[in-house]
Amino acid sequence: MEQVNLRVLLVEDNAADVTLIKREISKADPEAEVTVCKNLNEFRMEVASKTPDIILSDYKLPTCSGLEILEEAQEIAPSITFLFVTGAINDEELAADTILSGASGFILKKNISNLHKRLEPYFNAITNNGHLMHPVRKKILESKRLVKDIEVFLENFSKENMSHREGMLKIQEDLKRLKTGYDFRPLKDADNSAS
Image (cartoon, rainbow, N blue to C red):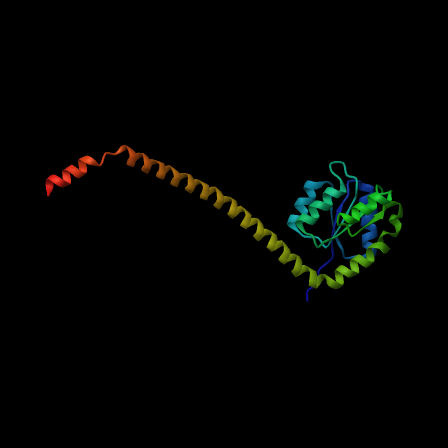
């Protein structure tokens, strides 16, 4: 079986935090591939081009919130582990909301020197179950694409069907007009004189 490096997608706009987090990731897994995005558009492009194994995201970003990143991640690839690494979650209600929204957890930046210890269990689970998860993720993405294709087909079919229906109604109206506007007596008279 081919060894695949752990793919980490880091959503962080602060360059100093990026450096610290990358250092901690390399302590947990020196072979991990880390890709960094700063906003929602970059995030969408990265996830679409290469599905990560784990997503680490700040909660407060200049152009969006971490919850928007989480929602997008769940839409694109719902089985991916998603952790907030942030200094913004400092109340219990907000922390609970992130978990209820689908995050796997959160780690406060004030504890960044212990980030590698907090990441190790997630990395180990991904590494140990990766051979099972990658085919599942692939099937989920294929299914999502298929559902999208079916939705587009049905929308187009519905539009075509309405167009055909409108055409049929016009033909029916034209036939009614022809029937009511046409005098059949001259035809009957012509048939009787021919006999």
